Amino acid sequence: MTDRPTILHVAAVPFTARKLLLPQMQHSARAGYRVRLACAAEPGGWGADLAPFEPLSLAFPRQLKLGPLARALVSLPGVLRTVRPDILHLHSPAAALPARLIPRSALPKGMKVVYTVHGFAHQWEEAGPRDRVLARVEQALASRTDLMLFQSKEDFDESEARQFATRLRLLGNGVEDEWFGLRPPHPDSSATVLFVGRLVREKGVLELLEAVASVPHVRLMLAGAALDTDRDGVEGVVRARIAQGDLSGRVEQLGMLSRRELLQVMGRAGALVLPSYREGVPRSVIEALAAGRPSVVTDIRGCRELVRDGVNGFVVAPRSAGSLAQGLRQLTNLTTAEFTTMSHSARAGVDPERRESAVFQRLTDAYAEIGVAP
Image (cartoon, one colour):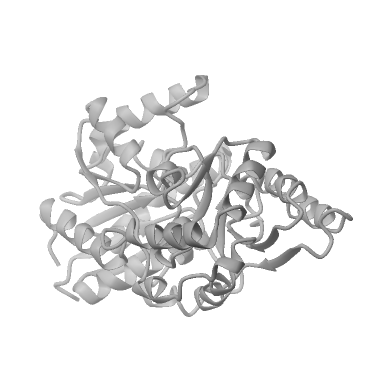
């Protein structure tokens, strides 16, 4: 038995827990919480990094599949009875939307429900029918949450304006201090750009390849891969495209990297490029800016929150290889003095509020605010 308050983090897949939640869980454990994890089982057993959090198998599907979804909803109350958490902390719409459909009467008495919005599944601007439905569902389910934490200020502001019926707090997103310790890039490296992300269509990687093909002096490093659960993976298409003559020898495909490997690769890059269609507040962009790397990003939620066009990078239209190519040209046409100024602006724009330690302090304060102090 322990008198430490218990937090149960629920995510869809181990990838989310490992890439997004692990430092947060480690911090909460050091702060005095007992931290548990529930997500889809990991083939071959849980890795050594997740094992300390005594993971439980709970498979919320990343796609709308009624059978797996129903099984996860039936399993969740049993998991909660086993863990008896003080806080049920939900992550990603795939888990957070269905989990909040369960009546509070079926949940442990006194348990608080927290939802970190890493990025809503819907868009606020240019919203189609699907986006409007999801926005209404999120608003309706807000009252079943004791606290909603937001990584994106746009999501936070929109939710406040629509008077979501719960406590709303802006959490932000941050990175480890070691990213701020990387040496600034040499101006001669501005034509070497790095992409970090899953190789899926909505990350804009296919448009990126066409943009790089049209700017001959740019070299691209691709760090990432598609997951088995991704519905729009394009890894095979990417592999075939970079073998063609106009890209041959100019694209380095690196696969999934550890944090240490990514730090080393970032040291070789002059800038980051992230042409996504949809994001929350992308950690890869914060890492790059903290490392003094200007970033070329699309004009979407989260990215435009981090990058000011012409100041610490360039903001281009999404889904447009031509606009992306223009952004890459602007980057590589900078003079040495202009690139150096932009590099300094990149780091200054995210320090100190985007340091992970500051984000974790806001998280602990938010837990305490709902009555669960460490």
